[in-house]
Length: 189
Length: 268
Image (cartoon, rainbow over all chains, first blue to last red):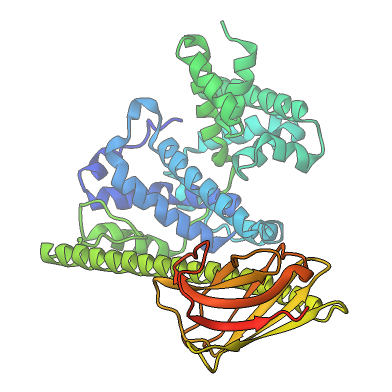
């Protein structure tokens, strides 16, 4: 994930620089919040988990290794992991059924759009991702999204979509392969 | 060279859909396969871009404030959920007191258990003794019933013994069943015999000069009564009289004294 146009903030954060941490939040919180809204379908849960994720980032900033990926990729990893934890704890409580009903209202809560995050996600990169996803067949994309955003296992996805497990594996492999190739072509240009 | 199986698992693993076994299998393979390791990294980077398909959404301002409040006051690690609380100092004497209290309670419990065990043992002993007494009483009852049946038998004969100079008020009644050659004897108002002596019943036969011992008995010191049963009586026509003397404990073969306590003719 490219971050060449941005200054790395996590090294300063690891030194206790609160101002750097504020910048980090302003830069990445919108995409992370969008991720959590997509995963959790609940603004309250998404806000709670976002706080947890940023506090973890504050505490673990010294562990960030720039050679292994961008700051955003690192933050996404932390945030998604926390989101999956929340989904699993929710499954125990049986609250997951409300997701579908909330989905539409959450999508409409998006505010400011790119204006708020123009420095967060390079437009070029986002366009590349969207373009790559657009080229993936709907069935493959759906399987990837259920795994990545909803935290479903292969067998859960197979059950949900009513297709054989082997088919799901193949769809995800083909989808990931195509997306990887398209992104490499786009971002290497 | 990319291995097709691991290509698939790496793709699944990147989006969090690999099973635990598949992830372990992949990790073991990646340690020795640089090509597949590079592919797995590429898949992870690809998956990390998936959120970019979403429209960014600004969180409410309160979220930012909460996070900054949490981290702003300190450069130390913080947590939102469980604030650090120093462990309170506990005086070691409290531990000693707690240990003593525990030992005392444990000892009390042990004593209680032992007392209860003793009680159970004692109660079991009482129950065993009562059971034994019940058996004895039942046996007595059966014996008494048998004796009463004998006493009520049509051929039973009765012989009365009268007190002599050693026990003028004493008496005895003999119920004899000639057919079975058995007899049951009840003694009344007899003086209690010393512990080293016992009374002996003698059968004076018509066909023999010397009395024949029929058995010994002891008298109950409180009721002054006793009873005895004789098996294998001589034929009733041979019994001339019956008498009782006080003899050494266990009885003798011939009377040691002519001091009779009871005597009576058979009258047969």
